[in-house]
Image (cartoon, rainbow, N blue to C red):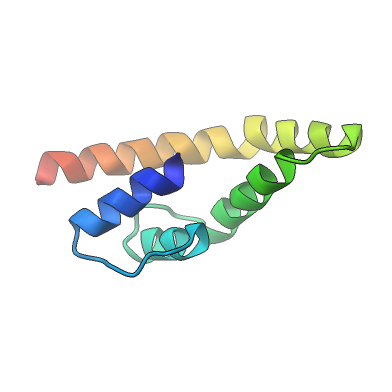
Length: 88
């Protein structure tokens, strides 16, 4: 869902050719919508892994990442999007 919003935001700013979530994240980083591209790529990887979790340890690790890292990054993204909407 986040990648879809970022893709729409990038398209609204004139960027095209965003065919994969990784490409969208890289463009969002280049446009300074997100600050830490590695964190967002890790988030994408965890999302993909979560679809097929068969390990309790991996599930615990992903939950920890969500609580300790991703919630803050999502909040920062929301702030950036709001700022851009106010400027438009």
